[in-house]
Image (cartoon, rainbow, N blue to C red; front, side, top):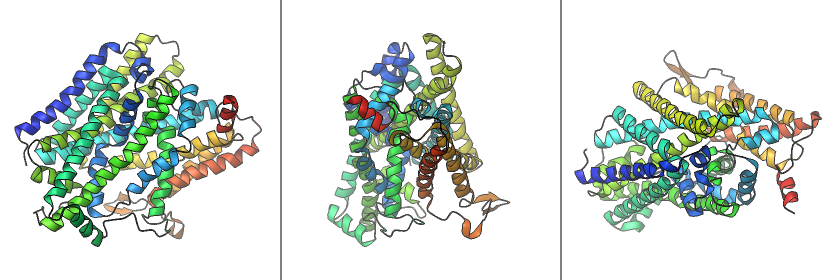
Length: 514
């Protein structure tokens, strides 16, 4: 499978535009205030589109159609819970952060619970997004390699170099305006693709729905209240905590709150990002459902053994007309760029704010900007090397162990956030007890439920029999949040130190506003 020159031109244009924007904005990056917050002067609609683009990664671009093709819409339940959850606290959280923190979301945790809480949360973000970047580099390069014949390694270096350049030159303002463009490309490519699938299928949308429904590919079930399997209730409960953690503790989202012109604009941007993300997730999920109906009804040939995640790329390369292929692939690249450029900028912000400036607070503005850009380059190259390691190991290897360790030492962060804003009683030492309890529980659950390859066979590192963690993996995060919250709250009664709450909890915040 090879691309037509017209498709290459479309993809090239979609890559040249972001580079041009970053070059134009480079002269405005005179200090870290502009580099990380865009001068705090970006329109709400643009910030909202940027939040959307950050949430819709290239993994979503491939995984959601794969899920819709092979199963029903159960994975969409997590996303559906996001607006339901956020409507209760987004108007409080956004102004709180804009008042309390300078740049890092984790500054809030230090003011509320001390430096240990800030270190725990910022390190968790650092590990999660750094490891995610390497994974996204690898997956997007692999997908393009299979669709176009380009080498995976060459694609990793090309994509990596471009993202580093864009983020390095234009800072957060360039990231946001590129996200706007890339968001429209992504949505446009998805809508055009879905339209082509529907109009190429005999009987159109009704026929697709009937075939998918008869095969059990429509709906959000199973609806059993079973926490050991992937059910509606597991995804719904997980979705609540996903929303809290993403919008309350994730630097890539919180940093965007700071780029808006006012508190009102920041809240509006958050709502735009949330309310637009659900239809986009649904769009790509339904593309998978439509593909299932298309191949069942049309009898169009599909390679034997094609995995569900590969059906959408296969359709792109074999069924879409010239020009549309380039547009859709540009959307795939846009999804990757929108996620990765944001990660790079935010990783640099966290390193500078939470680590370097803590020990070198008197560093002048010029040196801060230089070091911030240097971290962008270092983090970008490191992520490329992680992706190349994946290539060398065929997507497997010791990185699985690294990710398991990350899961152990980053559990409970949404619980920590809730403890901070809900309880006026929770204090520093009580919260640290909660963190320890959450880490220990997560370690137990991961070790007793996730097999490792030992001596050529998969087996549990520790097998406790009936005492193994048997609930679905999505519930692991839920329990870690709840354990941190409950233990942290109860343990606070055993320590007499006063809690720092003024302007940091919901109750005290409301009192200050009155």
